[in-house]
Length: 314
Image 1 (cartoon, rainbow, N blue to C red):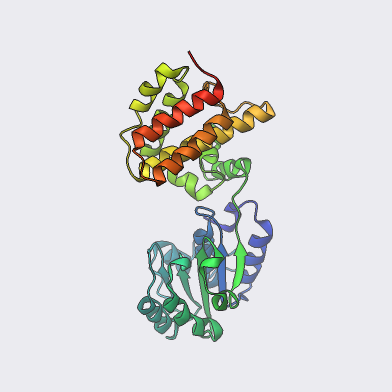
Image 2: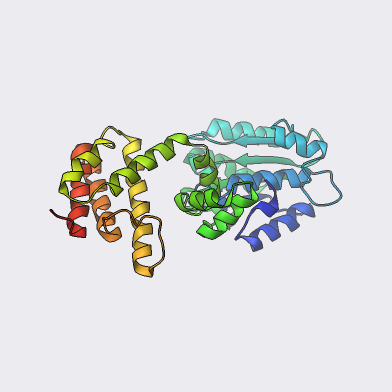
């Protein structure tokens, strides 16, 4: 990805391009925003730009430095990402590495790809480096919520916030990445404006099989006699998949409700249940699942509740 692949955050991108292209960045950035909003990708773009050898647009992704960044072999870049917990010893190892001289004579860059995974001891260990960073070092942190970090850490970084794109903006971004129009619109809807989530879902065949089952179940309900048949295809799901089914139903309910309120085509007109009734039933099913109520019972209750709300009775 390049700077131009980001949409809806023009002011933020323009500022970062100027700072990284001119070689005048701040010592530490914190990118905050929801999953899939591009925080980590943008941090990597900024890191490449800081050491790019091109005389033109940075990063060029063609020079030796850019190619080493893209290959994950640049000797002056380090990452701590995709970890449930970042411990103090790991942070101390990074700090020790930052204190050494740059191998290629440029800047040393480090990315904490999920800074909210740092425990308190790890954040305190990083604090001294943030207060007095080594020369020619730039630190990038990403987090879903800034409140996951200590106030002392937040006060020593430049915070930049990301927001999900609109559905149309997400679809346009996906089209620029080579995804066909109708598919891009579908992905933008299910990903709720997150380009990163949309790209993951595009490759997730299990997600689409599950979604098709959910739609078939909801579209097949016209009366009480259809409930048990509709539940049959979904009752075998367990654990995280149960939450995923409920997430899908909630999203479908919200889209249907919006279509009912605005009169616009929602794509879910074949579902006889009302959007509002289905949404309320899904929320009650969530509460039941959290109380460890049997999933099949919660599912059947959800569908019967949706029927009552829609007035679909024999």
